[in-house]
Image: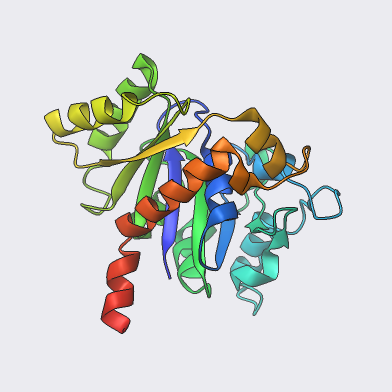
Length: 255
């Protein structure tokens, strides 16, 4: 079982949508957790199978409360809700003010995720030095940055990779480029830049900008996300992310 942390270095490059797309096409049992300290978007972007809003009281805050009490309700599965695409999700909170009560719980989240019977994709939002999500990144099997291929996005990515180099496991850091499916150059150009600076991150591929696919994931449009540009790019990326996390090697060892 693997824990995959998705993060951004700047602004809103589409971490939540990328995480949701990956979880929707993931080939194994998977849960999606939203722990963005700036306030989670997952609760606003998804609906239940019946089209109802997800319950904000059943998610990260409830898990945090159970963890602080030391109660027997700290299993991740007890705090998940299923979206219209059949993805079990741990919803975050709508505003950062509500996260202040979590405190030391941040340091216990890696153990909660690691104990889950299935892979966990974690939407960590924007990461900065001293961020409360750093314990999750340090223990994750793979940390994947989502970036737009513009000057600001790449500059911030380079700075963040450099500042976190001592806190992330070597060989487990990847980058997903969010751009149009017609963009065949940005990934290669970015890999060349990262290699030139010795940052040790691998560009995993492109997640397609696709409004129709995003609408399917948020249940405002009927259809299968796998048939969309977003879904097809996510299928390709899921294989690369799993390889980065050492999923294939783990299977070979246990066989």
